[in-house]
Length: 221
Image (cartoon, rainbow, N blue to C red; front, side, top):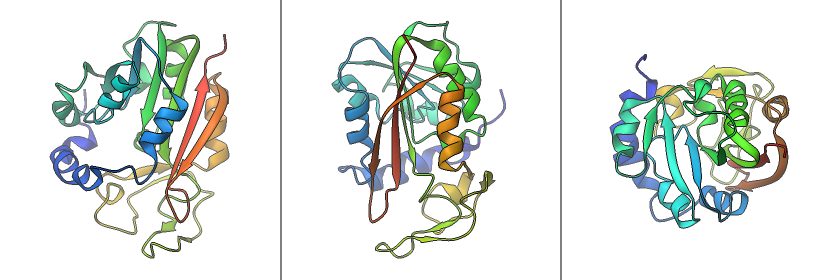
């Protein structure tokens, strides 16, 4: 399997990037997981689990977290937090229709093939199974969005373009290091529908404009 981009920054991500977010939930990521996934039991597959930082919350909700990621470097830090498998999310090593739940947390901008990933999620969920997508808000985050002024987000041309970029307003984040793929909101939502998932609920988080968009979806019964 090819070396993943995150392998190069895995240690920085674990020891510095995540440390800056410890002790709070400024983007509402954990709140969104609680609201859209809720309490349950059985396996919840975290697609693009990274270092497994959300495994504890999934357990608190009653789920048994299992993680899949393509980056060996990130999975090295996830070891001990949840059972893991190194795999391409476009070809999940899971049989059809067997999982009650799945989640992807702040991962979709790292996946150029996200529509195919959603198709795989729909395949492995059992009828009625829930999928929670938590990601950067496509309307307010991207190479086109300047967050230098914390009280006013400047939106420049580029939102309508589906692209991969390392352009970023800051050198303290992830985008300038590994890049990110951007899809306008309708394209992202259509990918869910094309995968056969039913959209149910939505949560936004962050300020002054939303930085996070979460989507609760379900495989039809």
